[in-house]
Image (cartoon, rainbow over the protein chains, first blue to last red):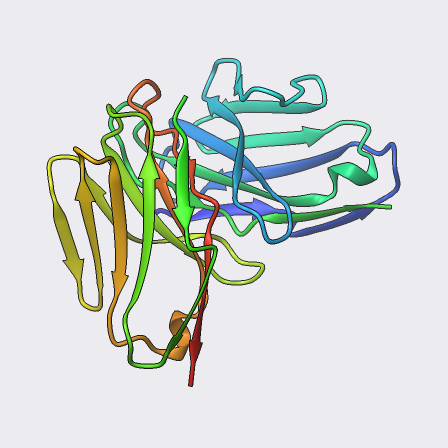
Length: 117
Length: 113
C-alpha cells in the first residue's frame, strides 16, 4: 500500500518551455502533498506544501509564480515549472501523506528528472 | 525554523562492520524523526523512524536512538552488507507544521567488500 506515482520520469525541453509534473496517490487519499527539488549530490530541499483544495504554502526563496502547484483532488497534485531555464534543471520529487494533522511517514514518488537545454 | 545537521557526509566501512550516522536538530518541539535511504536516481525509502516519546527503536540490523535533551539522534547499521551502500538522510518534523519534514544533508555510505 501507500503508492505514489509521479509522471513523467524524464523531461528534456528547450529553455522557455513550461513543464507540468503530476503526482498521484494510487491507493490512498493524500491530504497533503510535498514537492522537493534535489540537485546532484545534495539533499532534498522542500519547495512547497500542497493541501487539497487550498493554496500551496511555499518555502522561503521559492518563487510561487514560477512553480505553480495545484492540488485539485485528494489523489492528484501537479507542479508546473513555468518558462523553465537551464538553472531549473534538477530532480523533482513529490511525496504524500494520508494524514495532514499527526505525523505520518511520507511516501515518495519516483521523481522527475528535468533537463532544460 | 527547524535545522537538521548530519554527519559524516561520507562514510566507508568494511563489510560486516557497523556504521553510525549522527544528526542534530534545532527545534526542541520536533517530535518525529524518520530515516531515509536513497539509491542513485531513485526515490527515498523510509527505513526506520522514531517518535519523541521513545528513546530507541530497532528493526533487525538497523537501530535508531534519540536523545531529546541533547537534540540529537543516530542511525546504527550492524553487520553491514554491500546492498547497504546508498545515501542516507535523517529528517525531523517541526512541531509548528504537522507532516512537513526537514532533511539533513545526507551521508554517502560505502561498504567495502
